[in-house]
Image (cartoon, rainbow, N blue to C red; front, side, top):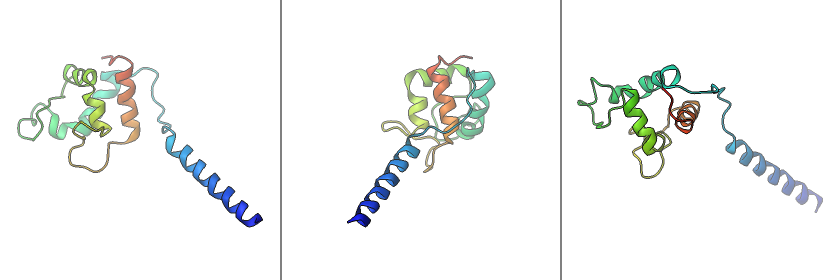
Length: 120
């Protein structure tokens, strides 16, 4: 009887630890304020320009141009930016045809940029 109780406690503790660890946002050391020019532009170039840069988007499958502040801001306002990078249902997952998302800290930085008014 005592052994069963110990096993139940271990199982319950394991489940609780798993739930807590899955719900934590990674420690990304995000800046106090996020600006397009200082933080976002380089990330977009690294993660998106293969298909979305001004000189390649016509050759690739992408119809969305995000090579400047104005177009990315429109995507942020519409919800398309975060919907795509978080692979939310109803949006085309980006990066396209990849099983994995961009890293979680990049997603958190983009999220903060959108939530704080998409400053240039």
